[in-house]
Image 1 (cartoon, rainbow, N blue to C red):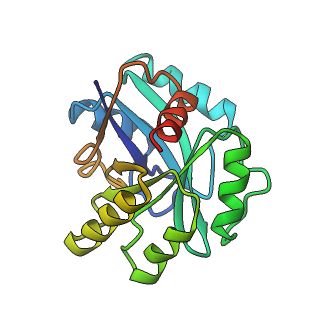
Image 2: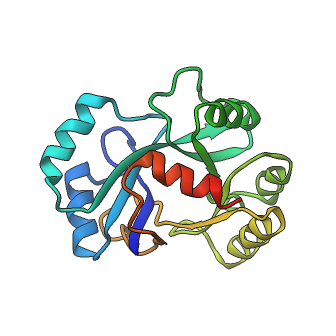
Length: 195
């Protein structure tokens, strides 16, 4: 099984992060994590950037993928499997994001749904999300309980990830995935098939 931390932010694309992507890779290795998914706020890495970081990685991490954390009206949503963020914009309706993602075979997981208030989390009961981040460095016990309940009642995937913005957090939370997950598209497919 692969230990993957699927919610990681790096600087400078996520200005709230204190770690450059190279340090994120090294922190993951030091934490005995097999893979990370870099999910910048409202940004998806472009091919040239991905190639440069993959050259740096050079197989150190078994898996290095890229997604995005999109800020929608109803909260934050992790998107895995998109090639670009065309037609995706800041504070868009989550239902619109999900429709675009699903049309392109991508998976959408609500990030820390009860972190800020219950209304944001409860709004996800009406959305066709594919999973729920049930535990991270930015959640607390009540939020985690409500997130588990949301995932259980909808019968969807439960993701545990660090939401790392700093080296000391990366890898402290992760989800185990089969070794067969060898691309972000396979990662998205695994989540979509868990419904």
